[in-house]
Length: 407
Image 1 (spheres, rainbow, N blue to C red):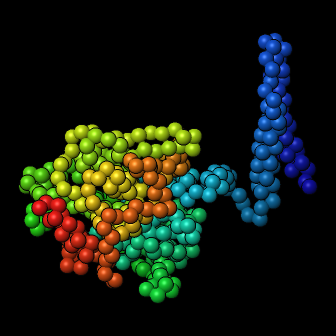
Image 2 (image 1 turned 180 degrees about the vertical axis):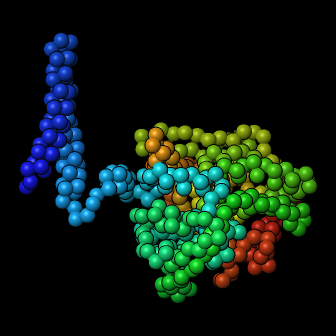
Image 3 (image 1 turned 30 degrees about the vertical axis):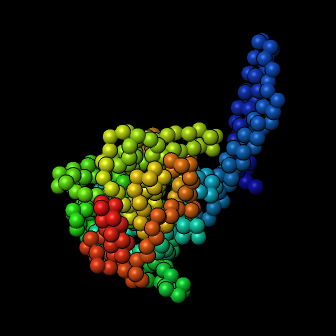
């Protein structure tokens, strides 16, 4: 062992020891003066902290001194912080560098440069497509819910480094990115597909509306970002001004987004009552409620396996409170809530802090929501909505059900 290393480690250990000794000395002084008894086990707790941090500092020193290549101290620290969150073994809890956090928040603002796909860590530790965003390069290239993105620009990625893959997929408009996806064919065999996709400026138009036969209003929401609620109110007002007879709300392939935006939209459909409640590990509950004022028209909601998180909250509230009928396939099953915080240096993190429950107290995490009427799309049909009404069997059933409700 080198003399320099011995001195370095000795200094570190002495500093930690002095901190512990100072703490203990102050506690004893307080005890002697004010007759306060130190809680049992406090000494052991201090020793445990000493051992924990001295180990980390010792290993960091060893890496800096003996690693084959030059060590970037900032990257080393960022790696330690990322490892802390990875140790939670929760794919939704993650530490983000300043640049990663900036990229992340762009999604919720509704404008960014990229291919337009919502991804999540899969249980198989692969980057899993929740849904391609409608009208984006990702959708036009043929990305589907359930696809696994295993390579970006020839580099292999797993869910552990999904942030790096996301960063590579983003970029300036009119530039190309190559990805490789893993998809199960109809026989369940692995199929590897290479795609070259041209990036665009993604301005998420998350709400669209139209009038269907028998004056039925149709609203499709593709995600819940900062702009969604205002867009939704405009589209809803346009339909209501035309005296529609009922509403079909299409939440298929909607991967979720901001909880408060979802609750605001739920408030437009539900009378007074619970929309959703969250519960922490300590049993602390927070309730989100709707007011009495709402649109009182027949309601059918379309969902599928790409409907996740906030869209499941909305669908679950409508189903539990018997406000409308769900048609389609079972939803994705993401029923946990992340707190998002930015730190003073611009970095930030997501941390799973609670689980959410539908008004009836149902947890859907890992389970999903079963629709009232299950309808499968014909094999090979990828495009959904009014543009492909002839083959969209789910929408056709929703229309027929709405006609029955109107009558």
